[in-house]
Image (cartoon, rainbow, N blue to C red):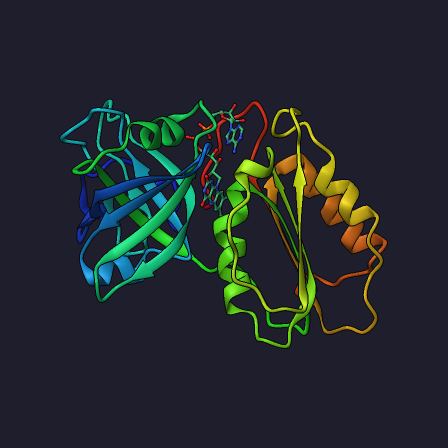
Length: 268
Ligand SMILES: Cc1cc2nc3c(=O)[nH]c(=O)nc-3n(C[C@H](O)[C@H](O)[C@H](O)COP(=O)(O)OP(=O)(O)OC[C@H]3O[C@@H](n4cnc5c(N)ncnc54)[C@H](O)[C@@H]3O)c2cc1C
């Protein structure tokens, strides 16, 4: 992943800077009341490299000529001097088609923050750039536990689609209500359980924590747990999986996807 801490673009330390990969919006679809799917077009190489987890460079709403940063040889981002209004945020490429030069990203329209505001205003022709990517840190296992809220649905949909047909397990998916459920392709042995907040604000529900707490660890060691949701919930679930379930580091990946009441610093 790229990181934030490279100084300004001048001087010998920044020779060999390359431009970021800029993509343009070609279509916008509302998948559910709070999830907006943005289809982006870009060069095949840029699309192939932009995921599954991707660092997005999000311009201010209405900025038709963003002052993009550039990328150092070691992958670090070099920001332009002065005000540029570009925010770095982590998202998931729900779908990448390098041949067609298409990248699909589902944005939760949570109302606040540069990325959510950009997505709410996105229209064909709007620009977005990508600057580094990472894996979903999944590992193959015959039994999977997948836990996430709306922000992790793109990642979980990829994990479910990639799971072998004989995989068993359970997915706990927290959303606002039935209108936020999305069709998912999953092996028949993975039970999908939608959990509805029913009016509780995102980040204040204990649905995911409670669902995991009520689940017994399956027998055997061929188990992998993947968790992506609000940070405090993830911390509690991680502790449960490490403590009560005794999962090793290799048997789980639990990462805060957003922080209640705080802007999200990108993964470094
Ligand atoms: C690896 C990774 C992959 C991710 N993939 C996706 C993805 O595919 N789709 C997606 O929508 N999100 C995804 N996220 C989450 C996304 O990065 C955060 O929600 C991020 O905070 C959004 O940035 P922002 O500029 O809109 O808001 P920020 O400036 O970060 O935050 C502004 C305010 O909004 C609040 N906020 C942020 N997110 C939410 C939310 N979901 N619900 C309610 N309040 C919120 C914050 O608490 C803060 O008060 C991912 C995160 C990670 C780490």
